[in-house]
Image 1: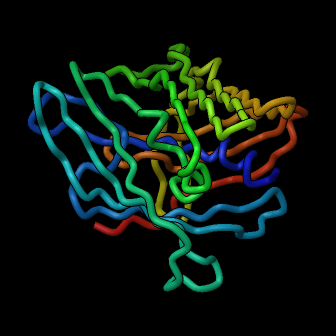
Image 2: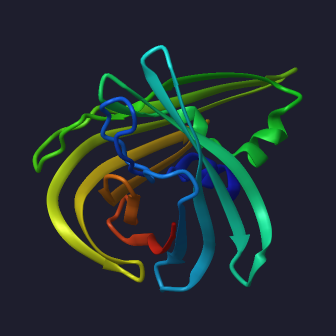
Length: 231
């Protein structure tokens, strides 16, 4: 059950710059740039480490697509890779899109490879200009999974997204002037419901600097921090 819950809530928020088209994005601006993150539980214990590396920027039909290689390592052995996924983003008409489907854990999805899976998504977006008080669009992803007599439905809705304030945030990677974005995450699988409140600090041309996740009672669940940038 814990793996299923993690399947729903493992989302990442990032940032990037303008390339040949005029586009404000929220991910690294240069190919080869690596972002190193550390995840901790509510007690401050490190539970995971991962990197995101910009590996590709392509333009076609007035749209720019970006690919990052996301690598999770063993927190006790940085040379041991647990899993790797390629995650994609796109920009069109100076609007930055986060494809919800790209955040699915591909290793976990392999468990459904012999089943019929239908995925429906509504992308998250960031407009070219953020400012305190700005309300952002909702995002969602739904999975219909069928295998003979067994059928499952999974849904995650990201709602109440809002830019709260522009403020400085300090992590081991440095001090950054970030947009603080809040949101509610509502996930359901059968009769199991999970509700979270997330706060993410983002900056363009880099991405997520820090994020915090709280349960429905307002208790801190986990934090993720940018600890190093490798150009």
